[in-house]
Length: 188
Image (cartoon, rainbow, N blue to C red; front, side, top):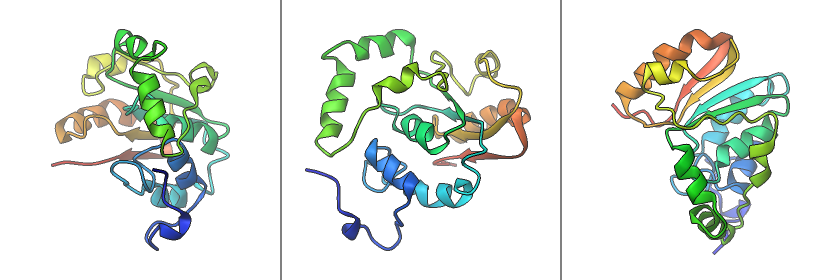
């Protein structure tokens, strides 16, 4: 196993600090894990010059137990508070996180490919995880404790257009002027 070398990456996937982070934590936003979206190419172009002034990023959907994009954002945006929101229940996450449980199995599998899990990110004062929240439910989403304005909002939740539209209506007023609202994997 193992991840492909930089030489194996086609010219369409430039290597930058964000793609290295995504690949380090096995994010599908990177260049080799699962869907291989290569989002880092676009995100680094957009955010690279402002990454040290971004103070808040909200992401709908943490993906795998290891929340690879949260781990990546924490390093890439050194001054930002990260607000991950997920539909998973607290009980489900706790059950998966017991020693030897599903999370440990995911971590072991990803380690075969050279990936890391930043377990300590959950105790970082800049990470504000909210579980038990269906982002497509305006009432649930409105109850999430967030700053008045957010620099970046990224919807990587259900990938259903109607859900994304509902989420947009609730969160758009929270986006600071000049901020970025990104919807990944739009399916219409």
